[in-house]
Every structure is written in structure tokens, then in C-alpha cells.
Length: 250
Image (cartoon, rainbow, N blue to C red):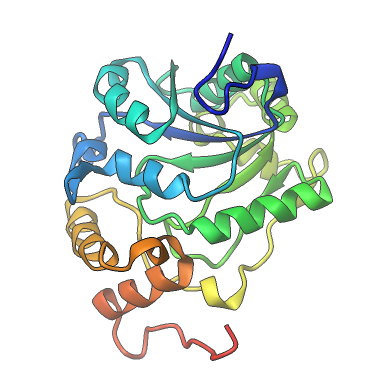
């Protein structure tokens, strides 16, 4: 049996990017299908994640989102798999079991401005020290990902009982530091901008995202780099005093 990502069998795969997404949203209905440029937001998220090295890319959605997402997943080179709507942790566990993943980079469908370079860096750090969970602190809200051992998520899936843990996937891990090796360092200075909000959860967020995308779309491949995104977003959304101070050596 062959798979689109390099034709390798599931048991051979080591690292996967798993993007969770759903069509419905209480605050901004069908936000993942709102346009950024000529494509929907969910495609822009996958486009950014394609800049992060991985063996396999999977869009893990809800059953009622599958039909709408399918053509864009195919275009972006993502496998498509559906699972429970509310128990997102179980959705991840189903993906892990199906594809034989050893480690995954967890991303969410409302973050079109993921820092591709920061995502690769935190995964490399987590892998190097064998961390069950790795994630940078200090990034703009909506710019980061989480790097997680598949075995740790399966453990969480077996033991997590609260709705919050099941919905948000990783809280069981960092809520039990006695069971898991956690790596949560402050991000390198060049990626620090905690005052910035880059996620899309409201109408105002979407309007800001559209404005930011229009600027970044002129930046070529640099638009996926954290410092490029910070500089563009800071000029648009932050006052002079709020803007992070860049250093020439960063």
C-alpha cells in the first residue's frame, strides 16, 4: 500500500505534522474557509506547515468537515482523516494508530501565521533530548506548535478524563510533570513577541489576518519566517512602545 508522502508505508514513518481543524466555530462560523488571498484560511495554515520538515502531513478533522476540506488537503499534500469532534485527543490517537507515527508536531487550523522556522527548531530540541512534550514560551499567540512523542499522547488518551484535557489535547501531559519529560523553554529573542495576537478566532482577528497576509504575500519564502511575520505584524498592530526591540545580531 502506497501513500502520497514519499510512497512509504505507515510503519516506516517517524515524524508527522498533524493539523486539527473543524468547520464550525461558535465565535466565527466556518472561519477555516474564510479567504486569505485566493485560498481559504485552512489552506494557508497547511501552506505554512509545508515549510516544516516532516515525513507525513495529516489534516485531522471532524466528519462533518471532511467534504469541505478534502480538495484543499489534496492540493496541499495532506492526508485527510476524520475523528471525534469534541474529544480531539482521541482524534490524535486514532491518527497515531493508523499511520504508525513515532513523533508529531501538533498544529491547529486557526493559525495561518505559524513560524515555520520556530516549529522546526522546537521539534529538533524535543527530539534531541527525548522530550515527551516540547513547546516554546514567549511566541506571539497563534505562532507556535507543540512537538510530542506519540507514545505520550497515547498514554494521555488512556488516562485523561476531563473534557478540557480531551478537547485541548496536551494539558494532561504538562499537568503531570512527574510522568512526562517536558521541555518548555523561552523562545529565542528573535521570535519573542507575546503582545502580538496572530490566531483567528473572531471577526476582528480575521480582518487583521487579511491585512497581514496581504503584506506577507509580497515577501516570498521569507513570509514563513518568524522575524518577518513579527516585523510586519508589529508595524500593523502595535504602537511604537509595544513593538519588540530587535537586535542586530538576531
